[in-house]
Amino acid sequence: MHREAHDEPVRLGTTAAGRTAKEDVRGAAIFGAQALGVVSLLAVAILLIERLILAYPARLGPSVSGFPWERIVELERTSGELVFFGDSVVQTAALGDADARLLPDMLAAEIDAPVLRVSQAATSCDMHAAWLRYAARLTPPPRAVIVPVNLRAFSPHWERNPAWVFADTAAMIDHPLYARMLSVLEWDWGRPTDEGFAASPVVVAGVEVGTVAALDAITAGYLPSDEVRRSRYLVRYASDIERSRRLSAFEDLVAAANAARFPVILYLTPIDVDRVREHVDAASYANVEANLERLRAILRTSRWPTADLSEAVAPADFDHPLGDPHEHLKWRGRILVAEALAEALGEAGVLGPERAAAELLEADAPPDAGSADDAGNPADASPLEAGTH
Image 1 (cartoon, rainbow, N blue to C red):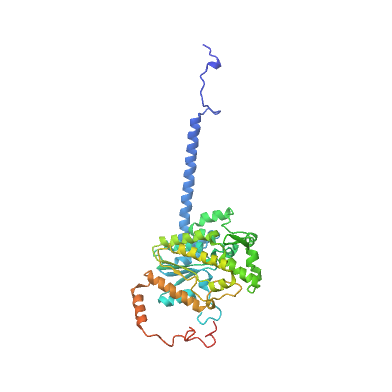
Image 2: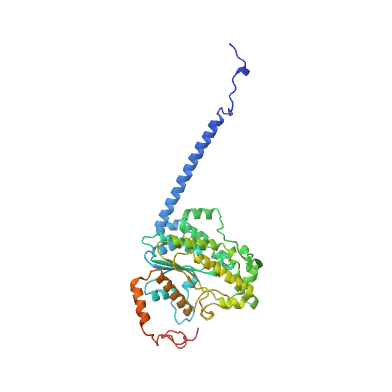
């Protein structure tokens, strides 16, 4: 019997290929699951390769462009040691200092124990947190780590300087391959162009007062005009700290310190507050104080002993030109910081019972009248060196 075409039953949901919509959804789900599985396997493979690179940095690290394998090798030597992280402040002494020892060496003398220095000029919280996370994975871990936090590092003068942005290097210490892939994809890591740096706004108490190029006038050198000298103190210390990305990096650093199974002593780097006060108006100096208080508030969240040395050093003990303020210290300033850090290490229980007993004996001993002159110069300082600083 012949049936007309219109007598055929209608099959709803049939695609052009003859499959149902339900089958299409099932196929898409299977494909998605397979793709997710491949991506997951790839992610796991990348993580495993990263672990291998970090485990054998000298052998495998050079094959990854930009990977700081030499720094990783240096960090590996911190296992079981007392370690001092830092920027250029901890790796310089003033020209003609009566005592030319670096700050970590002075601390070593204070506590009668070796101190290993790991430092790089212009580094700050983000890099130091990456170093700390790596050191925390070592077996055994460091005995203790000391980390400075510098107010100037939160200013546009420092944070926005393209040559001083190390976010990509810090990320490579945690994830060398993922960080490298982002760099290949031209992720900027918060690093502005030279033009962007020059045009960076300087904001004080919510008011934009100029740009980095106009106020910091880098090309003016160490002996700028009085106007540029005053504005440099403004840019470097009074700029609104709440605008800085490094606040979150500082919080990450404290989190890494709190997670560490060894003491991490964080301290605020001394700044020349008296000279800052001389060069900015009262309202701007109030902003400097507010910036310092913001850092202190974060510092207080550490579970380890800390040291606020931001206002501890006199102007005469800084080693910077009047027109180019920074935080390098002369020998008396470095000794003051070393003594404060030795005290913090003692509070953290790092020095041990032998050191504590020695300190008690030293406290009971009569003072050595010949150890220093009235100006604080070492007894073995030459007449030329004594009184120079």
